Image (cartoon, rainbow, N blue to C red; front, top):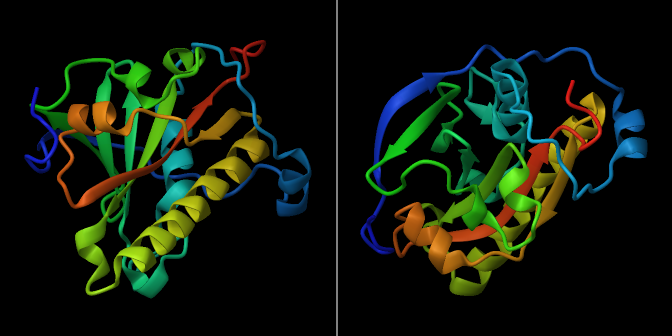
Length: 208
């Protein structure tokens, strides 16, 4: 396993996601009414279409002509990368191509247990990891980098909350995580910071 500070792991075997379904679900006001955190999950995997919709809602491209996304980003830095951990392994979501890039050489198999310390974390079928690439933030000062990257990760996490509320998925955002251990597993560089993680899946009493 690579150690933290060695840079990005090699990305192999891109996984093509189905085109996102951008219609359906609850209205925005209904989703806001239903939005809540859940800490019990069914272990049933999310089907590819649902995962595709989830990632597009998180930070996919919604204005292809300009490459702009569903979540805002200060100064259009787009410094937050969404990493996806499942029972099959770890991936980085690539919004421009709407693909998952499998991480090779830094991780081996299921590392969901590293994305948090709570008991439910390894059972949630999807754990998202929001990683800030500080090198994309230009000459911003240390305080501004911390503030804006946290804000931008929060926008993405709220998109995920609202999508999950709209389709009946369980979700919770989390800040309690061993960032050193997870960063090592993901072979993150010194210019990258784990901001938040977020668990997503079916409610424990619903495997449909």
